[in-house]
Figure 1 (cartoon, rainbow, N blue to C red):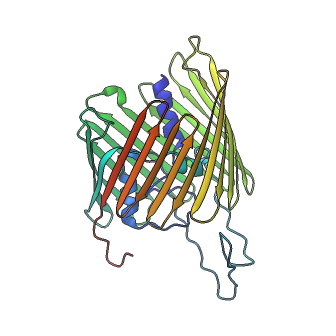
Figure 2: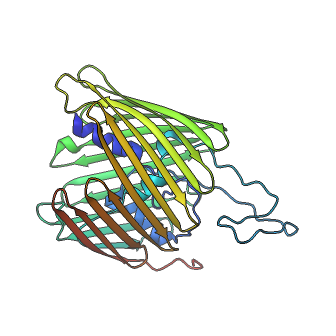
Figure 3: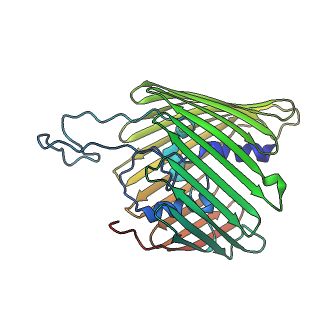
Length: 372
């Protein structure tokens, strides 16, 4: 049960990413090929949200401000972001802290099958993630021209088969489905379906999943002020009758500062009598400019009185990203990713004497005619 709940928690929390971009507006532009690569990566195969919004150009008689970190037409109020789904409250911090660390030699290659379909291959040699010390996965990805339909599939030599589908309906409804099969280890099978509704000032989400047991979850968020969101979620697990996992949170965000606080309650895996474990998290992200962001997270759990502190940074280029993480558990990690070339990854866990270093190379397809 503990492993299932942890796996489900990671799947619920992380929703930001590659090709299926987060709803966070970013200032860096990434070419189509790099988005395909990040979407197809087996190390970041998670739920992602895609937003497609047109930004009207400024009129000729409106002066443009200069010198600011987030410059825009003077006299025009910034367009407010749509309400944020509760599972995306921590999207900025998760984008920095949940790094794509690997070890060994890794190759990401892609073949342009058609305008909207691409075949991707991933090969990792000398890795500690498998007893055989190698991983090979391949599969197609489809993205419609209007970016409202996305289909991704992956298959590996270890017997794992993954598939994900996302369909946007209008501007307020998004449907998702994913399925993970493992031909050799049936306990790793997982199937999930979810629906997300986005209103003018509120969002709703519902999810039904099977991970060896049925899980039913619901989430709600409400924007009560232009920069302030509140929300919560509840998950019911069909284990020992019905086990519940819940959390509530608040999010404040402006152009430069993002503050998120939440409190969660879940079964304590260390308790023989099924007691509950309460944990509080406080996250702060500071955007120093359009490229550099710094962040930190403090967490405290009761009744075991355990605490932890993490510090992270992220610097983004047009086609590359540099990330670093330091925490009080003795872990230091860094990831340098060039989505059109090479990449490096390093992670040192002093508490467990675990050291992982990796090198990555991207093999890109030829760009489409007229594509920059």
